[in-house]
Image (cartoon, one colour):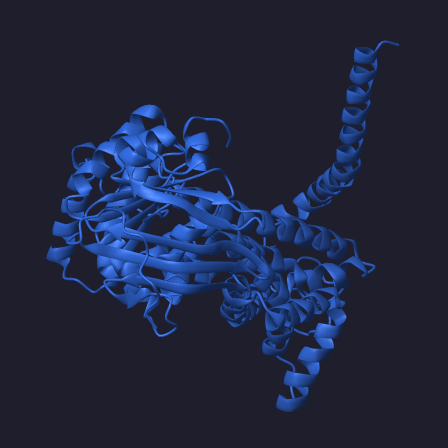
Length: 261
Length: 269
C-alpha cells in the first residue's frame, strides 16, 4: 500500500473506533430512555397521578402528589442551604485558592464526592433526626445539601476558571479592588447558568433513607411491590423524574442563551 | 533611597519626566527577567519599547502599574518613580496607582456588559454622580472616535463590536477614570491595518493630554508613532536589558549601539 492509502485507512479506522465508542456510550442511555417512556407514559397519563395521594397497597388508583411535593420541598430546601455556601466556596477556590488552603478544600470536596449517598443519609439522620427526635423533610434536605455541596463548589470553581484572566486584568488595571472584580465581573460572567445546571441534576439524588415522600423513593418502593398498578406508578414516577431533570437542564440552557445575547 | 539618575532621553533639562524607572531588576521565582533596566518617560510624549520576543518589554511595562503583583512569586527591585513617588514601594496604594496609570492590552478585553457599562465601570466604581458618569462616558467615547458609531446602541453588548471597535472601547474605558499615563501592550497586534491606523491616530491626539508608553513588535509602528524609543535585548543570562534609549529619530537613523543597528536593519530578531 502506498503511504496516502495507509493514512486514509488509519483515518477511517480511528473514526470508526470513535463512532463505536460513542454508540457504546449512547445506546444504553437511549434504550433506557425509550424503556422508561414506554413503560411510564401510561401511568403518567392515568387520571389522578399528579393530583392524588397514594392509596394503600392493593387499593387501585392513587397518585404521587405527596412524592412530587416532597421532592420539590427537599430539593428546594437543600438548594437554599447548599447553593449559597457552595457558590461562595467555589468563588474562594477560583479567585483566592491558589494555595495550600485551597488545595485542602479541593481535596476534602473530592473525598465528599466519592462517598456513597447512604453515608449522607446517615449523616442527616444523626444530625437532624436524633437531635430533633422525629423524622422530617429537613433531615433529607440537610443530607442532600451536603451531598450537593461538592458538586456545586466544583461547578462554580470550574465555571469561574473559564472567565478569561484578561477580564480580571482589565478590571484590576482600572484600579478596581479585587473583590469588586470578583463580584462585578467574574461572577456575573459565568456562574449563574452553570449553577442552574448543577442543581437541576440534584433532583434525582434523593435518598431512600427518609420517610417523607419523594419521587425517587416512590420509584424504589413501588417497583418492589407485587401490585401491577404500583409498579406502573413506579415507571411513571421514573419518567417524571427524567422529565424534571431534562426540563431543568433545558431551562438552564435557555437562560444561558438569553444572558449571552 | 535615591539611586543614580537614569539616562535622559533628551538633553533638554526642563523636560518633565513623568515616569522614571531606575535600575529595575525583575524576577520570576529564581529567574531574572530584567536586569538593571532604566527608562525616563517624558510627560505627554509617546515612548516605545521595542526588541525581539522574550526581551522583557511587556514585563517592564507591567511593572509600571504593578500588574506583576498578580503573578505569584515575582519580585521587582530598583525604583519606578511616578512624579517622584516610588511605585515599587510596598506602601504604594496599588489601586490608586492603577487609576493614575491605565492600561490597554494586547487583545481587546471588554467586559461582557453593555458598551455604556464598560466605559462607566471605572467612574461608577469611583462613586461619581450619574450625570458626571454620563458626561465622561460620552467624552471618552468621543475621544476614541467611537461616539458616532455607538451612540445609538450604548445599551447593547460590547461583544458585538468589531475587534478594532472593542480595542477603542477598552481605550475609552481606560480614559474614563482620567489617568495620567496609559500603558499599551502591543495594542494593535490583534487588529487589521485599518483598525491599527485608527489606534495610531488616536495616540497622536491623546498624547496632548496623556503620557503614553507602548510596547510593540512592529518597528514601523514604533517609528511612526513614538517620540522616544527604547531598544531592549536579552543578555547572556537571558535577562532583558535596555540597550539604547533616545529620541525615536536617533534610534532609527543614528543608533549608537551596533546591536540596535543590527536589529533595526533586520539583521536579527
